[in-house]
Amino acid sequence: MGYKNEFIRFMTECDVLRFGEFTLKSGRKAPYFINAGNYRTGAQLSKLGGFYADCIKANDIPVECLFGPAYKGIPLAVSAAVQLYEKYGIDAGVCFDRKEVKDHGEGGMFVGQQLSDGMKVVIIEDVMTSGKAVKEVYPKVTGEAKVDITGMIITVDRMEKALDTELSAVQQVYKDYGIKVFPIVTIKDIIAAIEDGEVKGREYLDNMRAYLEQYGAN
Image (cartoon, rainbow, N blue to C red; front, side):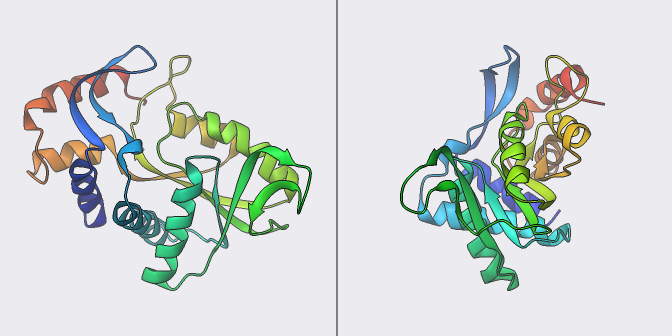
């Protein structure tokens, strides 16, 4: 599994991947939780950016610009761009949106790389629960220029169906926008890593499998 197992170990070391019983926003009780807010230091963000870069390279995703939706996506896109250049020599631009249009100075909705027609853009996010970020960002980005969104990178695909559909958030984004979402790892990768002894958590395996059986998307 290469960088995938390394990333799963990294999440546990950063206390981002936790096991137990957690009540999610959906009301479901999950045996694991992913708290991306626990990436707090420069060293952690630098290493995290490297995993985004690994995912882009491993999937051979064409990229000219990394787009980080405000606010969480901004530091992620910056760290990913730095590591994409440091590790693979790919010098991609970085762009992010403002929550409100700036009406003074340079003005506008976007900061960083100017988007242009045909530009190959990869969206950088942490986790995807409902696809809300894409719903907000897609019309902004495509309204600015006729860009080619070649993919979206997230840290973990929970592979879990939403409350109002049998599709997962990842599947729904592809259906609605034609954007392919590439996770660094999936929940099945995490289960396999526990089974193989790469990380601790064997006592939670039965609950994790049962949860995925109940709520997993087809």
